[in-house]
Length: 124
Image (cartoon, rainbow, N blue to C red; front, side, top):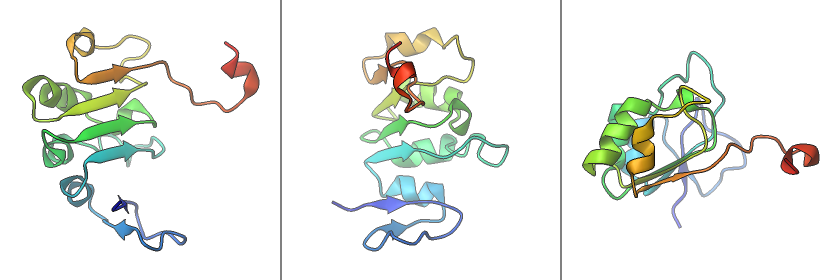
């Protein structure tokens, strides 16, 4: 399996992985794009229309970070038109509400957000 990642700089302990500084370049070579970064002004919509289009109709976005990291409108448009293959999501830009168009899509997996590793939260 080919593993690639994007970050500000290469990380130690990633020997055997390919570093792609540019998120578009990462998406072009990926089947699955896991979004795992913290939310900030610098990361807002870092997964934009260009990244989504580069992932393509066979690609899948799995977001386990914050909703603001992905341009939700661009993702929805790409999912509806088949320019993005699928998405797995547990956060939305207008939480607690979500765009009802997500519910009409067969290529989207929606689930509640599970950010905490604490047992008392897992029991809820």
